[in-house]
Length: 326
Figure 1 (spheres, rainbow, N blue to C red):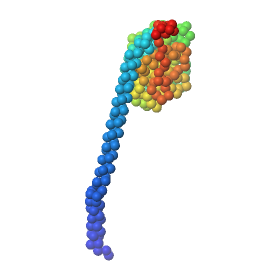
Figure 2: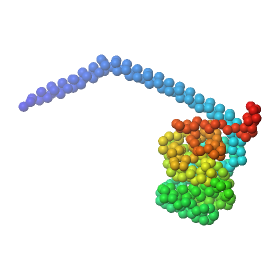
Figure 3: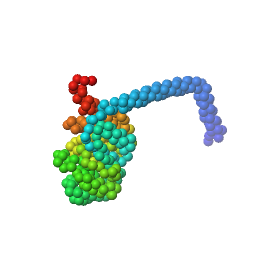
Figure 4: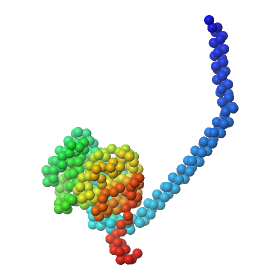
């Protein structure tokens, strides 16, 4: 039988070894460890200072770029969309500054902003009840207003597609230009969708020939991509292709509404930095490009996007340039 004193000695030896280890670690090794940690701290502080300086330089550069864009906006925008009519369709959660900035740029370009339609969050809901309600509502409104009945689709957003087809037909000239929706038709469609809580109309838009769809704000991933892509497709069809989707730079990234639009089967032109002066100019230029028959393109700050369309001068400036005058 092992004596109890043996156990006692073993326990004492273990605690003595721990005590010696702690003593050695806190004395003999502390100098090296402290020096290492101090060196790491200095490196981290230096790296942070360098990044802060670089970030400030980039911030200053962006501010300078936007100041330059603002200073040159009259030359880049004046008369570019003269006599054109534009309607804005705004997604839930869109940045108010993006919407107001685009509106100001369009007006500076000589366009008439015929009105603004704000989609509600319920319009983005894709459950069975919403799909059924929207499909039936679109059919009823088409019958009431004399607009062509919406195309039936087995898509999971078939209801929104039907409503968007009717909405686009009431807001925009037909592709052939032969049929312009009357004020009563527009009012009946918007009132029907507004009374059921699917949208809000600011005043009562008149018929337009161009459309801008303002994408949701906030960081990606964003909800509602499938619905908004369907809305964009209907606006594009009703405007003979002259539709642009625009959003803010904070929304850039994988699974954002704009990035999903860019890879859709029938994309519209997109601008992903419309919260900036230069991005708002791009929205106008993108519409002008579409009116000139150019294919939809991607503009903004995402990798692979065109940094800017080539500046288009106002008609008066274009004539002067062609005549050889500065």
